[in-house]
Length: 316
Image (cartoon, rainbow, N blue to C red; front, side, top):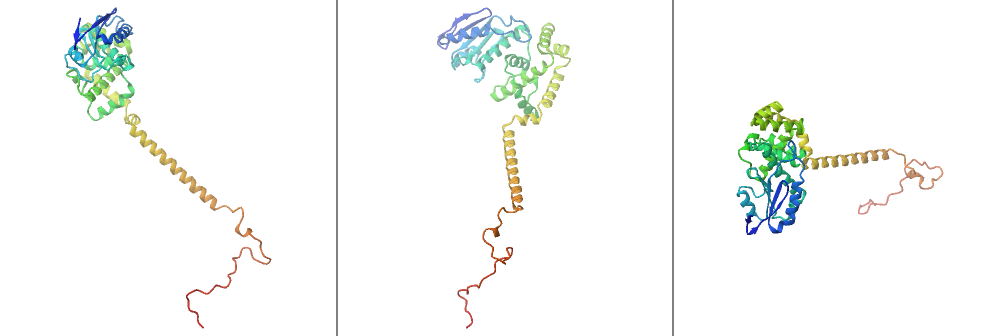
């Protein structure tokens, strides 16, 4: 049994999975075992994959670093080590691993292990490995593709093959890399779905060549695929789409609508004022009192004698 950061870990066993945990995480471990044993089949592969998985629930940061070799960024929610059939997730924040986001993390790392077992340990391009795990776990949100459109426009989206060299450790750069990888896998499988994926994985395993399997299944080389994918992103997620996802856009639109509404109100007021100015009064002013016989109602009143101006010297 394991002893990590002063705690002796227990173990629960299932048909395909065993879960190792600190005593305080026993109830969480039971639920994690149920979740992993009940996972639906991963896209493109048989229901038996992965198997022989060890899921470790690291109860502290020190335990997590010990299990992963300390090479994983602090923000990382989980890690899969296919060579060991090991899945490591932290529980230092309590049972949040059982929240929807935590369950997606389990599915994501589970997908990594399944993909590597399906390919018999072949080397997998990092962008495809991470993109498949995102896509299979439901972590890919197509509505976020507008961010990728901006990255491509400003030249901040790295080439797909460069992600195989080193996955970004900076959180913002890593989020962009996950988005890039997931959108590329989604585009690759857009027309063929799981059937095309299963055929692609089978050919990849048989030929032991990612490039050959990609060419024979989808009719493109890796370079051609990347060019097609970039054009696809720019075409589908144009600047109008990007703007419509921007808070600034909606704020500006609200201000424009408010200005238009106020301008229309002012025009309506001016129009009503002009109409009222041209109307005949209901009761003309000369009808307000009795009219003397022989007087001209329309004539102005005669002026009476004016009082002398005060302060003005008059001739004697």
